[in-house]
Image 1 (cartoon, rainbow, N blue to C red):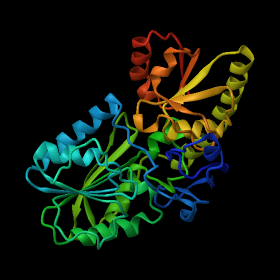
Image 2: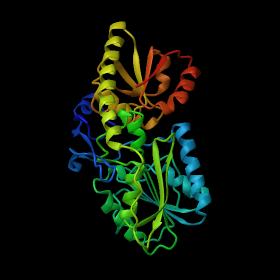
Image 3: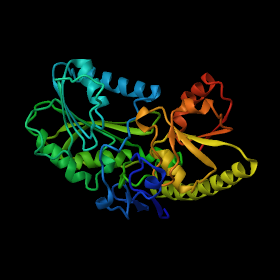
Image 4: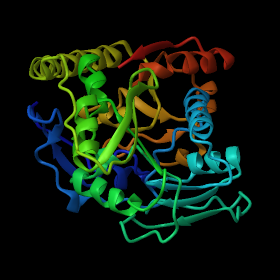
Length: 371
């Protein structure tokens, strides 16, 4: 796929338009490894990435996503009898999912994330310990019953080394389970979900590639299944003391799928640049709903300017900040009441019904367009 310059941190919140427009950028160029089924950013440079408290990728303010996360947590607690046990989450973000697992089973929790920031309005929970740091295999001296890494592995340049480190840590933890959640590269390719291509992801996993990575790292894979409208993959595994088996090949020509994606990518960008011209010529007011990674990619790839004047998001953490690369201010959706838009652009179709319901509630009859 052709190279694009993108903000290196699509979810970093910038305090001013100037800072946002001047944010660090990196080249994004995806290529397929036909041997393992991985999609790789061949121009990735980890040295220009910085994860800190201003990196905000939590999605739990969405009722739809919160429902998915809650069901995932309930399923894990029930199937693995996670009650009065210890959960280790690597890349826990602000800790929302870890807190849920702890509450559901009265468990103990340990969370690692350099972007962790304690909410001063939340009471302290002595059952949970957060480390504002990167996880390493020497970070934990307490045995855990569940190790979970959600939306993390795709951020790591060498996932095999990382998984092998976790496997070494878990080697003596009897019956411990590893749960990994990543974006589903196969779904992204087949649906032409082009806005899901972000610089923070040096690697994208197909189901085969995820299973192969876990097996190659010494895990026995219980399951690899699609989740959240097929946009994610969830894998469950445990330490394997026996022969490491290779994952089965996908009954699909990935090279052909990748080629269609590259063509579809270029076509969609071209159509959206034409649509932005139409919005400007018609004098329409357009806003972006959803100031996350997909929305950020959309704004930067189609090179939006005044055609989309602002972004709105239901996360209060983002209000008053600006979109990386293009600088649109991020507002509370309630701000749309004052000056209703003609067009609302969304970059992830799974949230369309949720957004439509909120607009109807506010009495705004804007056209909703899925980018």
